[in-house]
Image (cartoon, rainbow, N blue to C red; front, side, top):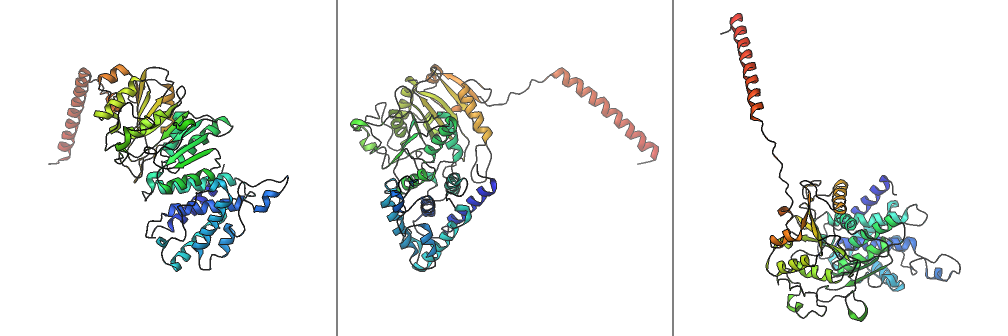
Length: 489
């Protein structure tokens, strides 16, 4: 466990690196370059030269660093012109030498014109190299807790972007939401976990870390697909920096072109599916949904202008038939909108797939101030009821973003696992009652959070009034006597 001083030093260095790009105009996001530099520094610290692979009987490094491509070579030349070109060349050589890193730096360039003139670019990248040469970001094997340190550095970068509201923050799920989802699905080591909109990959990594922490054994097998090329590259770097080795991340549009496939070209099945898909996506592929080769929309085709149930339908169809469980974050409209969405929701209820609906506070996401909800679905439900939890009032308020505290996460997890009524917080509801409400899943419809007014005892109130009146009369008499005796007018 890293001590607080080291954590603060790492976070300060990462945020300093991100801040270097704050005033740089153009389309290049500083988060991409900072993550790429972090990976370059990590590989340089733990990797070895090509000759190290031939050391018989020695420890084979996980990564190969070709001659001239090390971070330290680049840092030594940082005062010379051409920093961007040298860094890009080094990243390309490292990528070619390591199959695990193929394509990771494909959408990233330190020599991009968006970073400014050649002189400005050199100054900026010289500062960046200086930041990463700090003692806080030293990940060499002789530093205790090097693996924890690099993972913490990566998490600090994610936290910076996710909490800043900056461009690209919508690809980062807040860590508290990731933790909550992982605790709800209860991952076990070797589980196959899929995320059709994996963004930076943090949700998948959190599930794997929880499984490793609770079992003390191996990690999970992680599968993700991401439409945005920059986010896909970040996800792959995120996996490497967190020590994950069992993963497959695909670049592409999950709804139009799902690429996580099994034998025969069928959708791959997972024990666990988790995701925070984009809310109410308009251009989701409605025009090709009825001809979907994987028949994901047999419960109904979602509306043209809202792809929420397209993602939900896809996720359900990728669950293992006996043991599959999933958690998806949705906007509240998903819980009650009618027409095609109401039809899909009704069929999910009829199949007894919906296990719980959890209402969360507003402003948990940097890119969305609206309150959101969590849907939990299971193939192996223990009963035919739905647990509704109103967790919308328990959180730590923030100026820009609210946060779920550890006590809030504990309460939600304990209530979900306990699966019982909790006054003004949770209620188990039969599918018959939900059907009578037109399959409406709005949490407020089932969990009464109004405070009970205490009954007023009129007799006791009258007695108290009489006592106070008598006391007032006594005080008035004393006051009058004092005034009269003192000669006051």
